[in-house]
Length: 154
Image 1: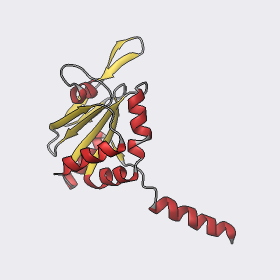
Image 2: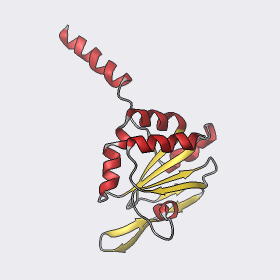
Image 3: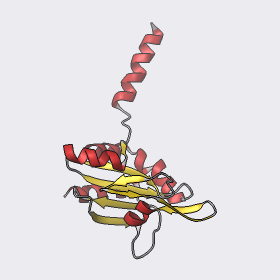
Image 4: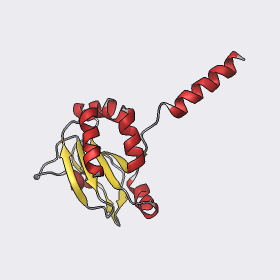
């Protein structure tokens, strides 16, 4: 009986209190836009970027942010050093090696370049037609990211 109680309690908490951030792929977003038009937020990062990792550990774990992203936007998590080809917006983007175990994905370059350089983390916001409407390159705390999302909804 105790096991049953704990199972019900555990699943009750995980299904209601701890919502997971839904991260889509570019290919999924192409299809989802046919069903419901939304702005797309692309989080461009690398594994070695400390500010990127901090945003993943804090900002993208915040329940308010998760709920807003899941309900109002399509969220894409893009590692700038992703090696697989990505089909998006009727194009195929590839990884570009720049040296020994160093390189960058063409799509990260296209979406994340600001003033001829890319500094991580980058938030790129696309409208419903997949056009860049905003790029922001800096760490955002949960509080600041919440304000960022509020402005995007206006």
